[in-house]
Length: 290
Image (cartoon, rainbow, N blue to C red; front, side, top):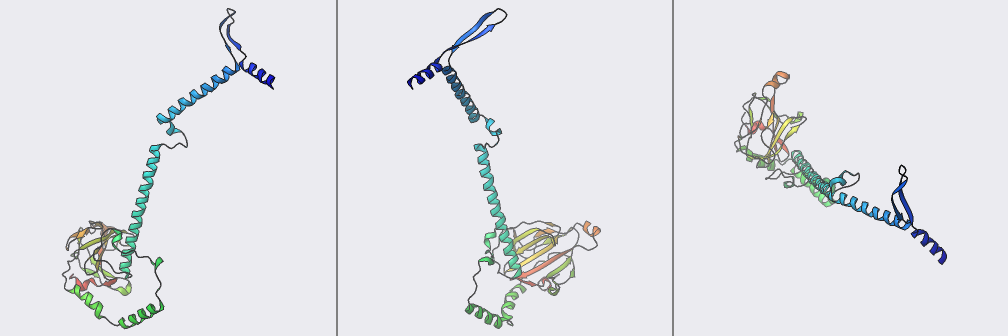
């Protein structure tokens, strides 16, 4: 065993002469002695040197960003910022969705509106039947008896609506009525013939709770007033107010057609006005002098 180790050591340290020979002059130009151990150590040192240079280039130059699969600190920070932005946008979209659901529920009479409605969706209670608690048999029986007793009681509703009779509502436009209120045919408002270029005025003080374009009714704006009254203005040409804006009676909130629509369509342009009180539609012709 000792003999083999000695032979291996001798072979590893045995020197060999490397020369550069000039064939034209038949002489050795350059030469030096090397051993297998020297070759191994030289290759190892060369590998360490190359690895160190590559590390310095990747660490202190932007070359690493062009390598596939490498993510720099700046890119990672941008990804985190994008993720936070997307999460906040998703929260805003969810908030707007809850807000629209609440407004729809108010129009359908499923929940009562609040007196101070703003653009923030959290100002209205979230209407979600997923977590609704079923009423007990005693509560169901009490509700049935109460509804039976109040079926023909019109005093409560009349007293609430009567408060609107003393209010002087502003006329939304100067046009004439071309179609009246007829809830049996699904027409929950009145149609007013519009003058080209005329603006739409708010009938009373309030807060805008919707201002957007709808596929069925065009540009629509909805205002929440006191006394739990909501006014809806449909078929507008351009909206002048945004959600959350405070409106005074007679203030311009939208514009009507410019007159070109009447030349390109067979139907005459008109403004559709609706009044809703506690989820019930009211005849605007009763409260507004057209």
